[in-house]
Amino acid sequence: MAPTYVTAQLRPDIAEQLRSGSPTTEAADEVLRVVGERGLQLRPVTPESVIGGVANDALRSTFVVETLGEAEAMELREALQRVDAVEGAYIKQAAAPP
Image (cartoon, rainbow, N blue to C red; front, side, top):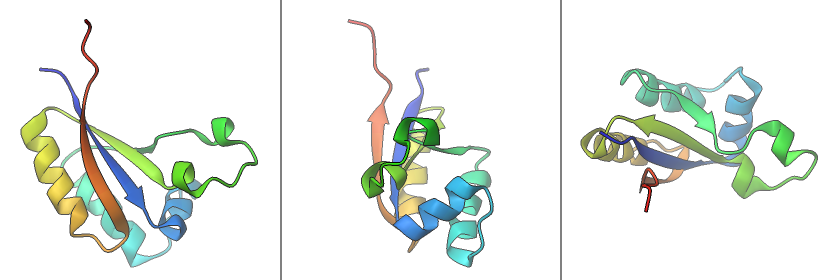
């Protein structure tokens, strides 16, 4: 089974907390809880080294979670959409060879 990805656009303040590795608010903790209770891991779409000094909120605020399939991805997306710190959550299938 190919992985399915859930992309989450977070509020910029929450994204910065998660990027720093030390979430300080209940909102950031809630994002981590929703992902973590499913045994999954949230990671930034672009690492800090790629972003450099450019303040690009869209890149800095976008995170991705790899799930085991479409059913798990759909459930996670729905859960993330109920979190106030999440501005949007979307499903993307893994790229398949031609």
